[in-house]
Length: 252
Image 1 (cartoon, rainbow, N blue to C red):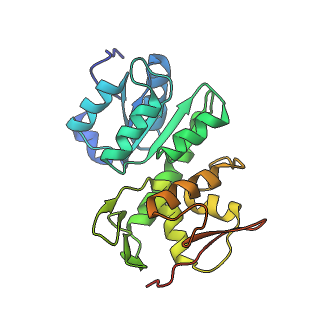
Image 2 (cartoon, rainbow, N blue to C red; image 1 turned 60 degrees about the horizontal axis):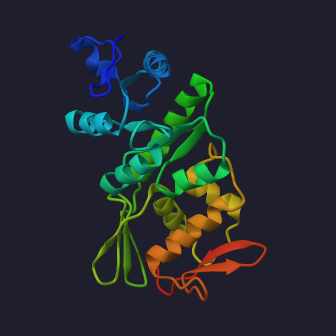
């Protein structure tokens, strides 16, 4: 299989076979052997994969086709994976699974806070990657088929289908996938103390490794989006030694 930095490379598939694919994945990794291995392996699980080398090729692929998930390497030539993750999240809600050869917790936390849905360290088992992709997509599809479409609290509105938060003044406040899920679980369980493990499960899924500070950083970012004073929060209150409690005046 031949590939170039500025042209997408997909697993060999005849047009007549296209209808059998359940999922379409875009793999952004400059390691050609790994990219080709993943494309071939994912095909066994009805995941049609397109592999590209860098950010420019990723943007081109996204304009030419639609994908269900992006598998994004952290270390890329030119624009790195964190920058591309930030750009992706600012332009769409497509699920993002990040890959890295570095195992620093800080890198993982930053990637998740920028809007990645999951994180895997290299080397990894391809079967685990499949499982994580399936978990991400199942969670996203569940989110999008949520019966309650709009949740209201203190003149704020959260549309769970559009995944859109609207402020009292009518402005739309962008949320990462993790921020959206965290806010929704707060709204579904108001005035109840939720510990960090419960919030991590709700915001990211059990496939994410739980770092001690990751949920605190996520809560901090959500407070900032909501204009909730961190020194005296009125919406997301800290319960020392226990976790957090959502305490809006009106929820409905």
